[in-house]
Length: 408
Image 1 (cartoon, rainbow, N blue to C red):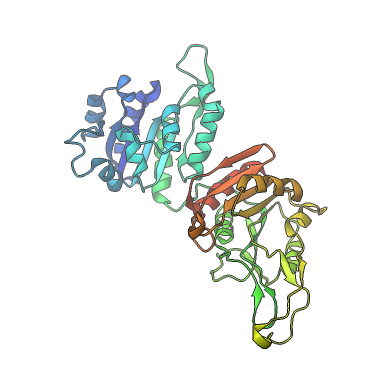
Image 2 (tube, one colour):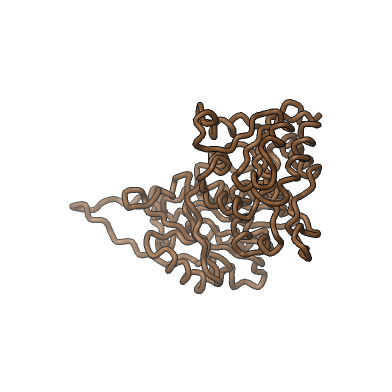
């Protein structure tokens, strides 16, 4: 039995499909699962806690403010003790709560405190499932690493209603649970097999003399995270990297460069590609004439002025090429007017999307994106923009790749 001894926490939310949760409990137990259940107030309008308790043979939890249930901080303990958390059925209302991080009852508090794999089986009216708000919430949750099963298409409980919104059958949910527990590292990312993705990362170094150079504070962490996630999703990845102190992910082609001109040439040499993600922080300027020897200070500390030339615009050049990738994503590292400047860049460069962020250091009101492990980004397209909450750069990469996979 695949689930033998595995602790499964089942969250049951409101909806006519709640009655199927009873059969789901039975099927999970048949395969050796140890089941604990949390019910929302809405779920208790359709099935009774007594029925659920009789099937799972464990007390049903339903009250965030119950002193007995919350002994030893029950909402934390419930998720920590589980090997897998399942939400079935998941109503439209509950998906919205999950997507926005609300925690005003025991079920939502448990999920906000959860650090285990999470499988969600939605069930609702087809029009509710198709509503733009629900679609946004589902994409948010997928980007956050939540696994989904269903919903299915068919006749609904309401008279003369049919479409996509039916809860997946209990055995289908059980199979998905077994898959997650037997392959816990399985990616929840969309598949990108057969897609070639070109990614630039890190800074460029523009030499002044044999010792000094012009650069910026980019660590390359966001670009490397994107490369790793794209490989995980099955894509053929070429990573063009400026000078960084990072180990490259396995399973990709790595091209190391120093200057903006070298990076542009590497980009051209790496085409064709289906998607280009230009995450590198390319230096805007280079020195006209690089000194062959170290420049020395003159009398009274005087140093001869540096004459600068503008570097090639890699993003704009790529977007104008005949063999331009189908989807080109640029990055805008700003310290003010983030959205305004990103929208201007989108128009001027000809990209399909700009990922904009505030790279100001903490001392200037930012979160220390450059060199740090966290990011706050805004996705800007011709249709508008969406702002994401602060998250790790790896989570940003997962969510962005999910978005790109849907557009390619």
